[in-house]
Amino acid sequence: MGSRYGVRIRKLESKVLERQRSAYECPVCGKQKVKRKHFAVWACNSCGTVIAGGAYELSTDVGRSARKFLSQG
Ligand SMILES: [Zn+2]
Image 1: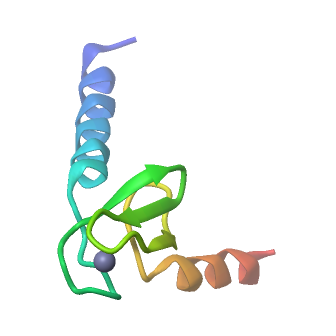
Image 2: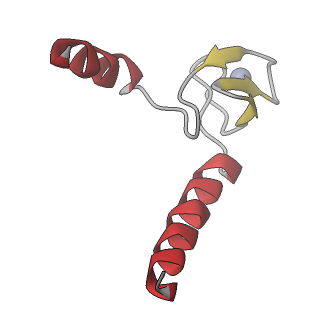
Image 3: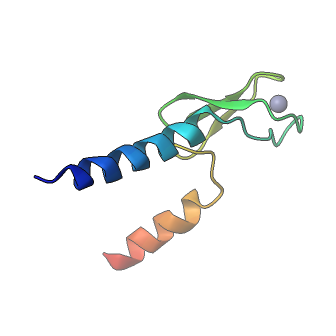
């Protein structure tokens, strides 16, 4: 097992954590206060709106990638 593999994994993890920590714009109040609360659950700290989104980032591509996945099967 080379150490290069471990470095690549750590880099990926830090990228994911970066996105998890960042706040997203709330579609309801427009403030950049939406943060991940639980797995795929996001909540706005300003107006309290709860959004079901991506596991690691609030993404509008969730539906698109789901359809892509379905078409493969
Ligand atoms: Zn809001």
